[in-house]
Image (cartoon, rainbow, N blue to C red; front, side):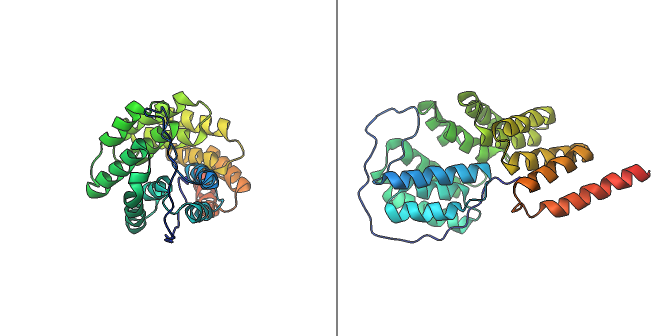
Length: 259
């Protein structure tokens, strides 16, 4: 599984004034920025990260912030999906610094991140669920909640993940994180169905085959796991852990056949 690829060093440039979405109660969270190009980079980075696609999201981060140094939503996104605590906190500090320029809904995202960083063992994400009651049609928000909870509160993560795919039945990456929430909740049949839907949505993406391969290996379906892992690697050779997994799975198959 590849859920995210984030390696980011924050570069501070001069602050610019952001244009804000004037709608008081939007059903999706606005993306407040002074630059339409910065917004496009944000959306491209979000797609790459959520789908586990190698496509250099860091480049999009840097370009977005070069275009809008007070881009709260970009800083907040990095603070959620970054791979280590120091990067999370550095980018959260910047989101917090400029949050007065963003929409009410984006400010709530920043506040939710503040709480999470100060209460790392919290398993409710109550602030994000409160936001979801307002932004009921924001599939990305429901995906984010699922991502944040799929390990530490899988049953609640499933609630968010199912909402995301109800809003968009072709939202592939949400099926991925939902599948892992099902695994952690010991609902393996539903996990397989979720990964099948991910494959349906994104047949040319290596990630869904890799994810289902993980599940098949866990279930002891080694031949299917081997096929899926090989398929994933044929689509994206940057999944450089797969060759070793293929050797291990083949060895297991050979061992079982000798018994």
